[in-house]
Image (tube, rainbow, N blue to C red; front, side, top):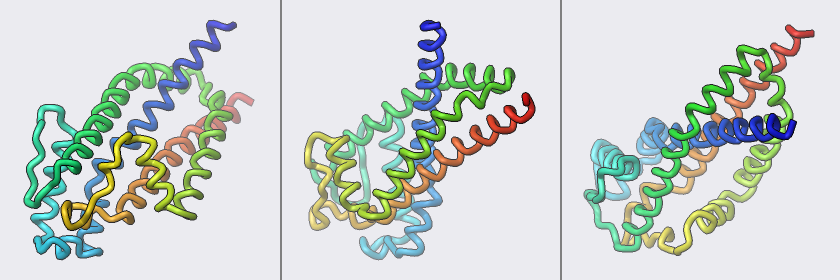
Length: 211
């Protein structure tokens, strides 16, 4: 019995990690979200660039953050030493996320496939409801005071203070507005909730078929 519970805990943890890392990977690579801000907030004009140039610069930034073989970040604007250090930290977090996504893919696929075949997705109901409550609390925090949440988030992930950019020294911060990061968090939560609701619906459907 203990072994069965330990196995369930392992696979459920792997599945949760996979969902989290997948939602993160999807969000940070969902370029249309940034394209929308570029066009509707006229971000390129803040740096006297064209929209095309700014989008290319964003692509360059993402390529640096995403690919381990790209070791140097070269943009069309100046970047301070502290800013480069911060982007190096972000790159490490990105690569850790991709590593966890890769590691958890096989056990998650194995676990969920078996649950679906055995019509036992419903056993995840309590865990899903708990996750939904936690996500609801996070969403409320985002809506009530995103700036404070954003600062707390950075202090949690980064030990140094180099994530605080001076627009005069690092103008890139002007084209990475807080509203864009808020939209990223919202997209992450919506995607996360969507996946959880899908499995909650599937579990209820299977439970009805068994009754």
